Length: 334
Ligand code: NAD
Ligand code: TYD
Image (cartoon, rainbow, N blue to C red; front, side, top):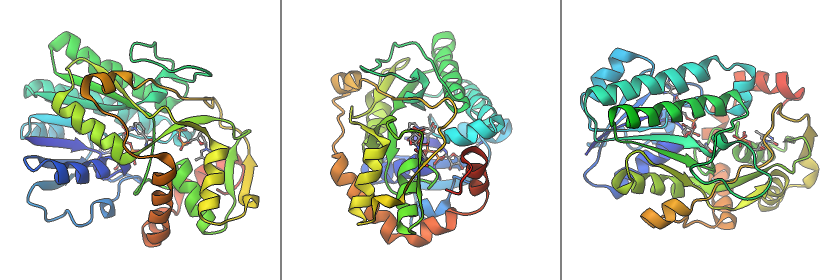
């Protein structure tokens, strides 16, 4: 099977490409990635010359490029997106262009070349916040940030291509991922790398916000199963129902690193901050037999060690423009 993976130089996309190459000896992958600030070919080191892998630098909102690549494959697995809520608060433009327009052009290309699958990778954030209980796939969407609103728009567009044109689209909505190669602007890698440098670790608001953390390899395996056995037109929630407060996660990271809790710095709250994300993954468990196979306590320790052992990777990406963005919203250097 020849697959076009978009956004394969990012955090989850690069983990997915490695996972698929290792576990599916018949797959051939074309990775289309624009290499924005979040895309990094170091994430795929060792694969450059692999006979079943090819990299193309380009924009998913470039119609002629997307058409030329879609002609070569039967399946698209679509990760490419602007993904950071804080950035979407400061400047939503790229979120609309990539997440909405880019997804539209990929759907059009998949329709034109009669693709057999279009896996649209989405997020639990489209459901919005929930104080108690868990959202199932049929829940109404109530996104809070320009990021989650742009993802919700692309989810609905993707599903409309199934309903209107019969394109075999499947949407996955996953909870917060953590693991190697995550850009250190998201909570877990930011906290680890700041603690390693003995810098303050910023906690927004009261720190009691909750997220369900899933190890990235569990997400990749879920997508692999959806790709093989998922039903067209369906949505699958992917998560571990392991919600934790941000402050508990930070304390655990500091403990693993043997760093003092005095590094924690409470800062202003994020505008429109969602209190808790919570999804019910019962459908993917019942239909495909997928369940997470990594325990948080074990995988977070592995993740912390990975950043500890790869300072060159994160020191290179952790510079420049994102520092300004932080200061603009939170009034402190991250
Ligand atoms: P990321 O920010 O690490 O990577 C995004 C990748 O997309 C980068 O390589 C970037 O260069 C590429 N990209 C951005 N704009 C592009 C464009 N116009 N054309 C081509 N490539 C472009 O993101 P991630 O955390 O790996 O997330 C991947 C997908 O998974 C996203 O769709 C996101 O919404 C979804 N998701 C993420 C999480 C999470 O916790 N990180 C959870 C659920 C769902
Ligand atoms: P983040 O990793 O940005 O993911 P998302 O907002 O998409 O879930 O943030 C996770 C949680 O951590 C969220 O409640 C915001 C909070 N947070 C902090 O408290 N401090 C930080 O420096 C960051 C980046 C996030």
